[in-house]
Length: 386
Image (cartoon, rainbow, N blue to C red; front, top):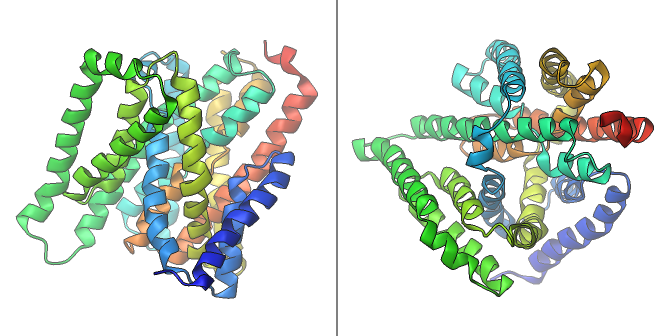
């Protein structure tokens, strides 16, 4: 049973997120930062709420579920060569830098590879609204940026899969069943997901549902069924991601946008607030001031990699200035990297210091690059990108 103190703390998290989030939106900063900030405040005051960590874990899985909903396998197969070259260039350039840096800091090459991948994640949830505000989604500039973000999702799930393997290796007293179970579970989930996506009759039947409430119920049902299956092999994170991919391909096209709006509204409005406040509580705030260079490096490496590769590979598609701005836009983060980083911290694969540097650099990159991109788009105007 929760006592009055815990109810009050949880209520305060939502009140603070609502009020501060409103003002952050006015500054073109995503309102979920408010939940992260209150988590930091609770961290500094030493407040502990046991339920928050338990709900935070479910929130972590639901964030992956929402990210999976962004995956459209058909669009990925139709991406332009410029998008593929830019994304691969970013990954290679940044991977070399990250692996070198983290190996020097004493981390294993597997952890270095995971961080190298997730630190390049693009925060589509923040980037797309900016493009929509300036009516640039359907322009070449907007489509290239969204395309890079779409292909980037493949690397995100790859990083998560490696993280699960590393976590399994750190476990003690493993049996052959423990080793095989994760891979077998993922294989079953993959097969199950492909069969359901290919079965057109299921999508047609779902499309006949009239009440939108049932779509919310359906999404929650799929989410928890996949979590239950994933728990058999300890791969709940991957199963949540697969659940999102399945739901995205089952939703009827003529209703998809409205349904997704409802699901994401519920997901970010409840689980998102819980998860990001949990991230804030998990940080080691002192380490930011003790080792500010780590946060700065974690901000600069991905940003430089994205800007350089965008200019190299997108200059022919756009021009020098707009390709540079594409690099700025793709440097907006606050995405899957926080989910993967929290997973790594939860399984004692990375230290609180490294986790804090990842979160702090993600916040810095999102705020700074969002402001730069918004100011540039406002000054140049939509016609410049047509």
